[in-house]
Amino acid sequence: MEIIRTTSRLSSLTKEAKAAGKVVGLVPTMGALHAGHLSLIQRARKECEYVVVSVFVNPTQFNNANDLKTYPRTEDADCELLRGAGVDIAFIPSVEEIYPEPDTRIFDLGEVANVMEGPMRPGHFNGVAQIVSKLFAMVNPDKAYFGEKDFQQIAVIRRMVEICGFDIEIVDCPIKREDDGLALSSRNVRLTPENRAIAPMIYKTLCESVAYAKSHTVDETRKMVIDNLNAVDGFEVEYYEIVDPITMQPIHEWKESVNGAPHGCITVYCGEVRLIDNIKY
Ligand code: PAF
Image (cartoon, rainbow, N blue to C red; front, side, top):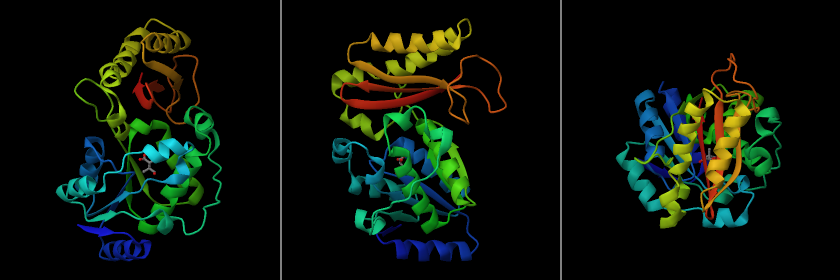
């Protein structure tokens, strides 16, 4: 595995790989790698002949300075994990390398970005579109891998791909969970032991809501999830929405859609830590 810090070296190596007829896969990450990332990398390794993993804590997608400051950074451990996973390139650039000048692009992300994380984290999705479009332009991968934990982010990235006209397959990969159901996240290391003890109740409640939904309306089901979690000392639900899986727009009736089964998307503060999760109905 080669560790690369410059965009020029990254582009020239990936160009070579493509010229040699290799299928190139990209796994964009912000580091603090865990088994969830590893599952994306393993999938990429299976489907591609040349695998690039980027590790970059992208400042333009943070709308909270403290969140950016406290985001875990574990480069040595990340490199060890990437080496063990048989990655070809670990791309670990500096902020200056990626943004020699401020990125002033504003993406017209439309309806997929105007709900849930969109209004809660103004500028977040535009920042995601900025960094992912830069990585796509540098690597020009055949396939790029994203985790379904960030369910809305995948819809936003698909929209960015459409806007920019990239010919890249977006591969969404299932959420990885701890044995007790907590969705793996780099932010989990910031949970106190007390927070960690209650955190699995998020997924447990989402699972219970799937059974509850069979005899209740969408609005009743949504309310059940919000009320049950808010009743737990240590949780504060920011939002819970049951949405169309493609448009991300909240639905109010359980009806079949050509877009597939509705998805419930939640953000909960568990103590100081903002956790997200989702479930299919
Ligand atoms: O999901 C993430 O870790 C980030 O949003 C991504 C896609 C790597 C862009 O910085």
